[in-house]
Image (cartoon, rainbow, N blue to C red; front, side, top):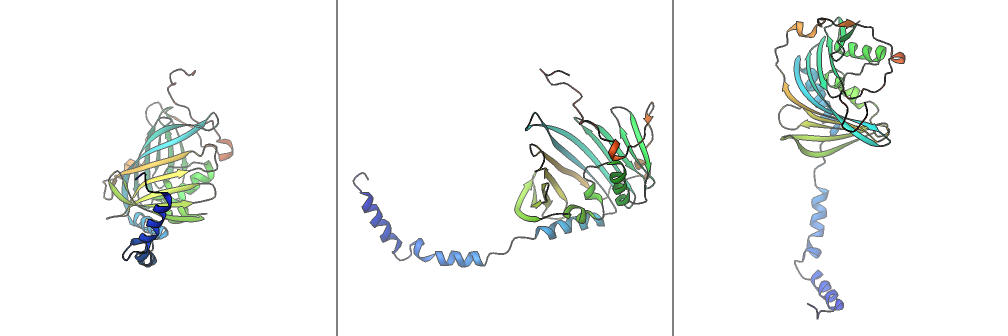
Length: 276
């Protein structure tokens, strides 16, 4: 091989290009034709709409969510905390969410008449009267008290409108697996965030993963939820949605959003080497 000059290699390459049956001379047109006939990718808008319509059609359901949440500190450094959620829904007027995590342990009860937020760490709870549907109650809780309930968009009957509000770009990423389940992987852009969702591709169109990237916040923190243990025919007694104050608990008032600003929660245990 050392005796072959660069010029000789160039001549060989030229000759190969013109040999009958050589890939460079005969398949380029076929490849272009095949590419032109390739089917269009699935419509992410339709897949999302089908998913939200399916959930809206379910009279009751439950699921679990394993959440990870980035907290930015010291410039752009990030710490990741976990939160486990259990969600139960009975339409049109009942929802319960139990949350246990690194930073907070809280429960939300809505029984069609009142909404209760219970802080298990401090044994405190607040109750407020609410309208007679899940959608209206969650909307009022956010509007009046700044209460943001994790994954609330998924359980509302107008979930599609809530999720697509201010979306400027959509993308069908492909068929990808979430813990072994084949899913449609979709991406959506809004002005302040980019979010992705994985929706089961075979069988029922259930959401299996959700990722939110806060692209305008310092460090671009991410919030991720893996949704598991879906049950579309659970046994949900009415009394599980009504809050019963535990022994020694104390009732406090909800504050309006302007007065409810609180410092970010901190871990209950100090990391080794850090001061409390």
